[in-house]
Length: 348
Image 1: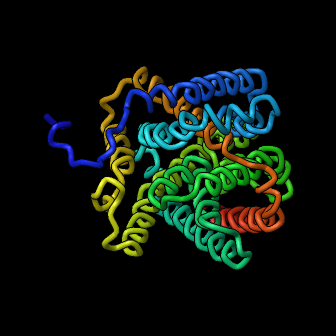
Image 2: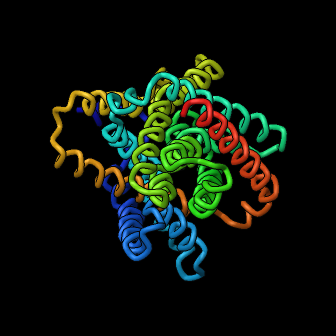
């Protein structure tokens, strides 16, 4: 009956054909996650999510694979970079122990909020001044201030950012976050930071959760615990930031409808899911086994998403804005490290 009532000239969407077209890319993303897990097992200092991005970029530039990646596998890789990213971000909420975060005290909460605000607006302003194209300043500012590639994926969903802008921003933030693993431990002694203070500094300044763990663990379990809690405070600010970006986009495009004919939601569904997951975690009803399974699923989904985003990076294009992007990355790194260091000194 639906087909009989369909207006003439309206195309019929072949869902099965579209699904079949996505399988090669999804299979490649799954293989990429497995390879990234193997890299992490062999070299524990390299987070799985970082390895996923690097492997995605690599396969997109291997001569015999790049035609497949940019052609047959593209639909599935794009699906991984968007849909799987949303699900992974929802599950990220289950890692957020609100009760644990609040134990650090309101002074630390205020410090983290100040670091996020200064990093976000400072990086956004500098990116605009440097003339970076598209949404790169917004995405890089988000990645530096909140939680790296996951935050970039979340904001890109509501801003409608170009896939190439997303991929380039993820590559830059991942590169700088990876360098932090080697650089920050060398600065603990010269900066006169105790192990707990070093952990707080790492949690407030390093981008990705895995990179925070890899950096802070060099100073022992005390530093690691402080780093993770402060990092989770930054993750908690992901939802309000995404909601603010969504509100801004909605205000700029007031009256504009989506391709389905509906107005965009004021708060994206996956952001509501993130908050709901954090609320469920705070109740304590979930057993440790369930939280562990959710963490594993989150890592796999985000790994597949980041592999998909990495495969969209085109290095020649990235090189054309490389100088400006590198300048923004260095400037943002100085801002987040400097402001968070000052904040730690004021709150310890």
